[in-house]
Image (cartoon, rainbow, N blue to C red):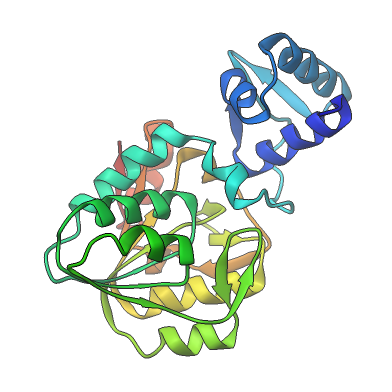
Length: 256
């Protein structure tokens, strides 16, 4: 990969994840630490990023306009996503009906369900989530149709929405590109925002699974206000002051 391509990739990853470590960049881009540090110095001199201890962050909390692919996101905050998924799995009870959004953190949850023998009804708009869950023969599994977005591998559109509306589930597990008090859950794509909103409306209890990099970020399209969220499961990177802001809005925030 040429230096210019690598630097564009670094910016794309930073727009998806508010901050990132040198190690994560080395692993994701398959580059040496010295190479990544040179790239970060170049980008800092341009004014597009700010160096941090052991990594980097964007110079400003800009809106999320670019979206990395599913596979790019899967390697970022990997350990945090596993912990978030494990906590989410603990909320699932036998014979629950749940809807699971497309996403890398929700896929980690799906893998835990697939490795278990818990009886459930599961609805999803993700073929990857469905494939992971199908290993559990105790699950009654439904996938919704529609157009597949290549960036997220989610099914979207009217067919997906109308299919989801046929269900009433106990719990929904939703991902998000951005979360703020003012804008709620946001995502770069309007069609995907509509699907997430529907998943929220058909559930009695709403869980948002999001690593701490998603907070204080706003993407183009609103998927739902925070008043519709019951629980947020995130990692310990979310500071106490930010956590308290959400707690004051009667949202159960769990850091793992």
